[in-house]
Image 1: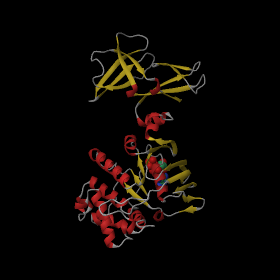
Image 2: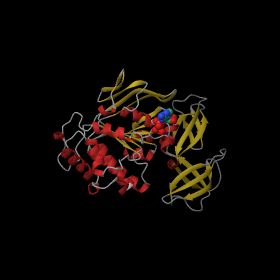
Image 3: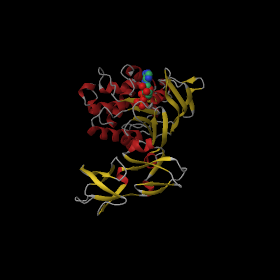
Image 4: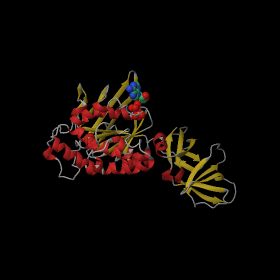
Length: 385
Ligand code: ADP
């Protein structure tokens, strides 16, 4: 579920506002017309547990975002992403475990640092702009501790940076959703927070706008050298924006690492399936080997009698036209043209479920009825069933 921000917008904005100048003077800010650069911080969670009433929703989560990096909390709905983000914001207090910002304890061991002292900026799915304030005043809201002149200068600078300066004097309902999200981003970053926390910030935008705003957001986070934690349920989005991904399931951290590692070396069937559609073949290890429709494979790290899931992405299977039915030959059951690619369903002897393959649209003869299916050994994944 996503954070219920409706009742909290004001409180959060005040909190963000109060961070506006914490520890910094306006003189430290960048030159006019630059976005200004944040002093990026690290944030780390050590063995964080959290329960709503008696239901454990975070079960010993340990991970860290380094200064200036973008960390995505990724996982299905209900996996605990928003709760972890709220803990980072200081809006929830973990039952056990610690949270540190720049190695300073902000939660745990009897410490709880309030949101307003954490130097964070918050951005939400529903943009959460104040309808009765102009765009400029929305951005200035977080700069209450600056002089009026400095706050206006900084707010204008941020609006210019997100391409919204010409809308400074209009109200939120006069601009589009994408423009509102740009303003929300400008408001969160104007006080130059050490860490920006974003809860599904792009999911309220239509698909066409989402790509643009997402790319602009990443560019702005990089330009301002902000550390960011972004919650998303969309694996493609995480791959597009993150330096590191924390994949969560049922309150547990399933895998944490750079994007390539999660994609290419998933540590579980869940990780593999979360990033792409896969075929799964379940087999028992015999004499250190498993006999699969893709040939005999070494079952490294498994013992005889172990049940394993052999897992291969739809796009990692190769097809070669075969003349007729036979050993290791599959029958084409259906083909679906999808533009750039074609989705093919194959029948394999001894298997009810079709094997699904995604190939380049012109990659297989139109009249083909039988195919030999192969895969590069290093693209075949094997997990304990
Ligand atoms: P996600 O952001 O991954 O969708 P959440 O952190 O919102 O997950 O929720 C994790 C679990 O905590 C879910 O099972 C959800 O039902 C539960 N939960 C979230 N907020 C509350 C609440 N205020 N009271 C009780 N349970 C909650």
